[in-house]
Length: 199
Image 1 (cartoon, helix red, strand yellow):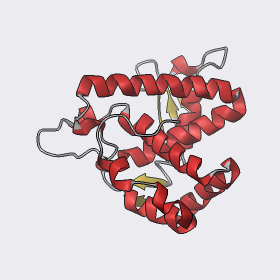
Image 2 (image 1 turned 90 degrees about the vertical axis):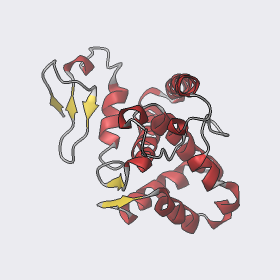
Image 3 (image 1 turned 90 degrees about the horizontal axis):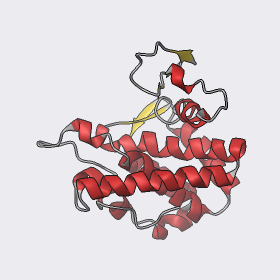
Image 4 (image 1 turned 120 degrees about the horizontal axis):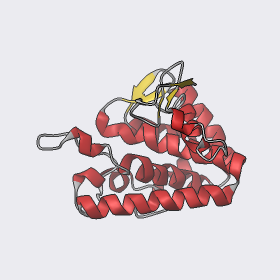
């Protein structure tokens, strides 16, 4: 970790070999450790395996949010993580309300097309709706340990690659063929608004 000058405009920013963080994260009570966990999780989800297009940004952020919350489960306990996830869900609900229930900006696979300001795509959807998607996959697998092992294989399989959602889903269904009928990929990726399933 490299602590940047106070003018650094982000909480943290992952890079392949070093994470930059703002000095305001150095809280004596360690209350902002989730930001550090998030940036470190990007070492796998964002740096090792990354999205092939910006429409697939959720692959970086959804998996990173899931990994971040797995870390906070271990460090702070499940109650802390549940509170953090509830807060994230509320921010997602606010974004859906602000953009509109039918806005393409609330789709998991957000189209970057004429008339779409790329800055607007950087909202809570790839983070929290992406987290819901990954959490749903973990839910249908059942055992947390088995899903955690799959995450390791996912990173091994796509290491140093840029992928799209279909690559991830193909690998998931190859690993868990019995889960195929439980995932409506088209709806998860392209339906605007709140996800049909929430953790």
